[in-house]
Structure formats: C-alpha cells, structure tokens
Image (tube, rainbow, N blue to C red; front, top):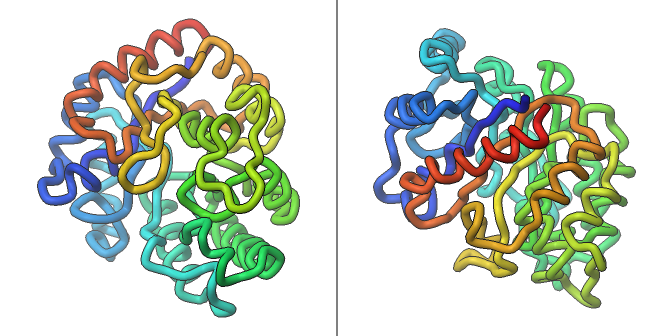
Amino acid sequence: MKKISIGSWAYTIGPYENDPVPWDVVLQKLKALGFDGVEVGGFGIHPNPDNQKTKAERDEIKAQAAEVGLEFSGFVPNLWGEKLINTDDPSGYIAEFRRGAEYASDIGAKGVRVDTVQEPTIFEEVDYDTAFNRVVTAWKECCDIADGVGCYVTWEFEPGFAFNKPSDIDKIVDAVNKDNFGVMFDTCHAEMVAGVGARQPGEKEVLPGGTLELAQRLKGKINHIHLIDSDGKLNEHNTSAHPPFGDGYLDFDAIVPALNDAGCPHDWWTIDLCFWPDAWTLTERCKKSIDELNAKYGG
C-alpha cells in the first residue's frame, strides 16, 4: 500500500493566508484521519528554515511528527521571491534552494520541490533558449546540492509557470540529466498542461490522451506524485484549481495504473488542495477518496 500525505500549504496560503491552521493542529488532525505523513510548505507559520534555525530545533520538529506517527514526504522551499529566468545570476534562487535542501535533510524529508518561479509571459522578455539554459544550469547545481545532503529534486510543472508544454517537460528532464532529478506529476497540473494547454505561449500544445498520455510519456522521469482532481479550469492565481476528488472529471481508474507503470522511486502519494477554499474541512473527504484508490491500486 502507498503511504498517504497532504501538502500543508493548503492551510497557510490562499484562503488561509490571514488565518493559517497552526502546525500542531494540522498534525493532530492528519493523524486522526489516518494519514502517514505531511508534505511541508516551508513558509508562514509552518516549519521552515527561518522558524527553526538550529539542528536542535529541527530535531524537535521531526520528533513532534514522529510522536504522532507521521513522516515528511517532502519539502517546499520558499523560492517564489527569487529570480531564475530573467537573470544571469541565479545565486539568490540557488542559495534559497540550498537552505531548503539542508532543512529538508535535517527533518527527514527526501524530496525537495522546485519550479521555474516566473510566469509563462516571461518569454516576452527572455528568449526561449536563454531561459532554457538558465533553468537547466541552475537545476543541475540544485541537484548537486541536494545529492550532498541525501535528497532528490522534483520539478512541479504547472500552467502558471514557464515551460508548461509537454515537450518542455521532456526536454528539461533530459537536459538536467541527473539521477536525483525528475518531475512531480500533479494530476491537476498535468491535465491543465497536457489536456487543456492553459497559458501556453505561442502555439498551443496538447496531447490527445491528456493526463493519461502525459503519464505514459513520462515513464521513468517521475519522482514524486500529487493526486487531486481537475475541472479543466484555472483559479484566481492563474494556475490549476486543484478541486477535491469528485469535483472534477479525471479518470483516476486509468491514470493511477498508468502512474504505477511509469514508476516512482518511493511509495508516497500526496494530496494537494493548494488554494482550494475550505481545504481544511475537505481534507477528510479527500482522504477517503485516496484511500479507495490505494485499496485498488496501491498494492
């Protein structure tokens, strides 16, 4: 059976930005609902390098989760204030990634998320080849940093950030060419990229089989999985809406077996309710839905 976690950012950003759910409350609820772990959004009041600066403080966070029987399935560094594509000096991005990777290692989270930070409109300022080379060069360095602390790097592609076409994903993974680098397959983002072609610059590129076909194409390149539905729409932040299971149209009975066949080097499935209103209340419903999928396909 797969181990199930949920992204803690659902309770700290968007609708919860001004009233985040306290970390200890999150842990208690997730344990009560039978989760195996939590994926940490490293910003706000939840655990992050600024809130726990010392190794002793980070050990306390790890022990606090272990006390209720939870592990950390991954960590999200706060990269959104940095520049990657529209600068020839990504040192700020890389420095923040390094802090995140070291923190992830200290709390026992093996996966460290990255994204391209800037919107797809960035190609109005920076040509494609320059942007591509900047991303690949920076991520190669991030992979070396992560490898040095026993972590892997996972790229969350999505319509709201640059390089949001299926061919982009293939090319970037091949160009980075590091054993500890791969893509985060978020089923909602995958549908918006491969099925809808949302916010793609220039000629739209979609796949006839949408999310399912993308999962098949990325066989051997997926190193992290987020499961959540899609209604084919963007949210007010101009990225994938992440509706709860049952509020969209994705065929998980086809997609999940394809993801199993595509391979992933660990057993975590993570629910992502990013920016969804009332995510806190809907967590229980989503847990029941993913448990049903786990019973059918997690063995």
